[in-house]
Image 1 (cartoon, helix red, strand yellow):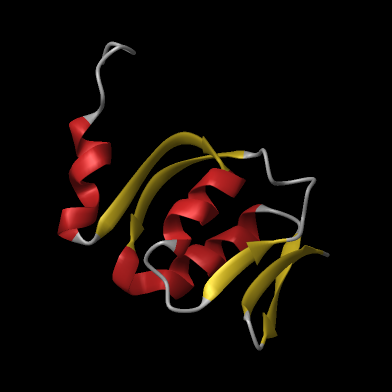
Image 2 (cartoon, helix red, strand yellow):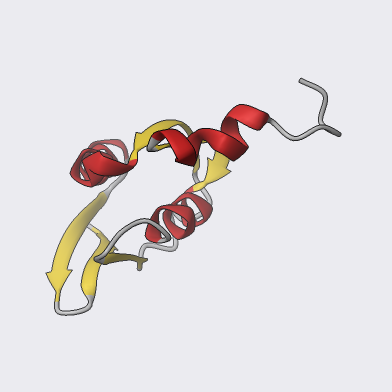
Length: 89
């Protein structure tokens, strides 16, 4: 697709309960996912914040995204009163 035109699949995917990311930095992916989560995710792992992700995230399966992060990056999840925090291992 030409860079001057928006990708409609990415823009409209939330209406189908999914979010599509194509080469987006982790910090941006988390910011977008937080729009749909009741428990917010905080990224406290600056070494992976700019790592790029591509894929489809199903909003109803929030845990699967978090489990994937733990397997892809050297991070772990910390449960807190304010939500989940992603920290370096």
